[in-house]
Image (cartoon, rainbow, N blue to C red):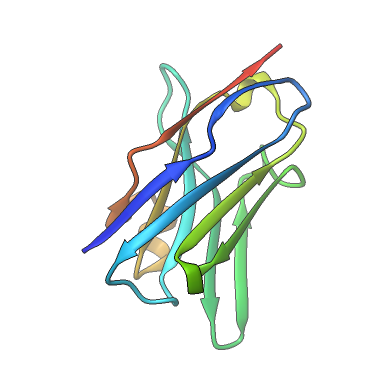
Length: 125
């Protein structure tokens, strides 16, 4: 079983930055697929950033809406996943969730096996 706990959410002005952290505990493998999702009020959950380590290096994927502004990173030796969010916009407001799955496709299609409880991000205009 893998447990994931997000932190770092808060209220920030447009153009500001936040760094979300996700602490991972339990039994997991470093080659899992890791990611961040968000859900705005009244909208469906969407994936924003994904990361997977493999023998050939790390693979990243970003949603078009955050590419160039958000950066996913990991310190899996210490069981932590990060999401650095810069140049925040009001449309970035929502609950942010970290997730993990042994399979890349399961994660990126929103069917991850492991999820955190979420942390709230509010970007004021």
